[in-house]
Image: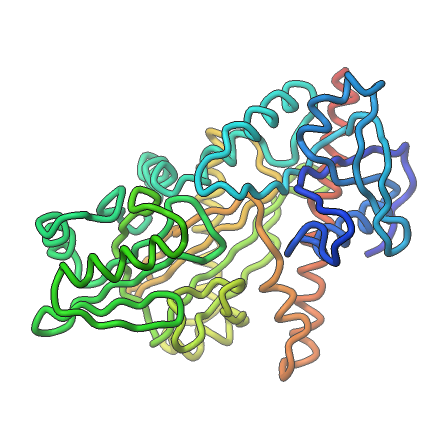
Length: 391
C-alpha cells in the first residue's frame, strides 16, 4: 500500500464490539481491522473502533467518545471527537435483527455518513426478506419453500414432495453454522447432512427428531430457520462463488475480486469459517465445468454480481462494499444465494498465502486483498470530503 499525498486528516469511526485485554479484541475481525486502521494511517487518515453506544452519547461526554486505535502494533485507548464517516463492522450476538443497535445506527446516520448505508443491513440480513426483495428485482435466487422448519408430518410431506434436495438454514446469518441439507433417497430414505455428519432416517418422525436435536443444541427454534430448494450443481462438493464489489476513492463502483469457496469432503457448507477452502475461479471451472471457456464463465458471473449490486442500490443508495455469494448450475444459470454487508477477506487471504499455490497467483490475491482493504478507506475519505464540501 502506497501513501498518497497528505490532506487534512479525517477520522473514520469503525463500529464494532471491542473486548480489551484479550489476544483478539475484535474476534475474527481483529487482523482485518488492524490492517484497515494501518491503511488509513498510510493515507494520512485516522481510524478508531467505537461502540455505537459511545458515539450516540458523545454529546454528553464533552464532545469526545472513547475508542481504540493502533499505536504501532499495540491497541491504545483514546478519546476522540465525532468521526467524519462510519465503517459498520458490528456483528450482533442475537440470531435476528438487533433493533437496539440498528436504532443507534439510524440515529448516527442522520448526521454522519456511513460507508455502507444503514438500510443495507436491514435489506440483506434477513434471508427471507432478502429473497422476497430480490424476486421483486427479478434477480434469480433459489426458491424459499417454507419460512420455518415444518413441525407436522403433513407439513413435511408437502415440503419434501416439492424437491428431492432441500437446504434448511438460519434465517439470519451465523457464519455458515446451522446448515442442514436433506436429500430423498430411494425407498423414501431421508439423508441429512449437518455440520460434518451424515445421518439417514426412515420416516418424517425420525427426521423431525434429528432436526429438533440439532436446532435445540444451537439454542434456536424452528422459527429461526428457512427451507430453501437445493440447486443441482456440478462436481461432488458444495461450493459458492464470493464476489466482492466496492466503491473506490473516486466514489465509483469497482469489482474487487472473485473466489470460489469449496466445502471439505464431509462438510455441509463451503463457508471458510466452517472449514471450507478457497480456489481460484479459473482453476476450479477447468476441473468442475471443463466444457465452457473459464474466462467467459467468470465474465458471466461478474456481470450477474454487478446486476444484483445495482438492483440493491436502487433501494439502499450507494453501497461502499458488498459480498455477493453466487451459485452456477449444470446449465450455467447463475443464482444469487446471499449478500453480506460486512464481507470478510479470508478467502483472498488463503489464496495469497496457501501452500502449493504458484507465486504469481499468490501475488495476485495479495494485491486483491490489499485493494479490498484500501477501497473502504479511500471511499470513506471520499464521503468525508464530499460531506464537508456540501456543508
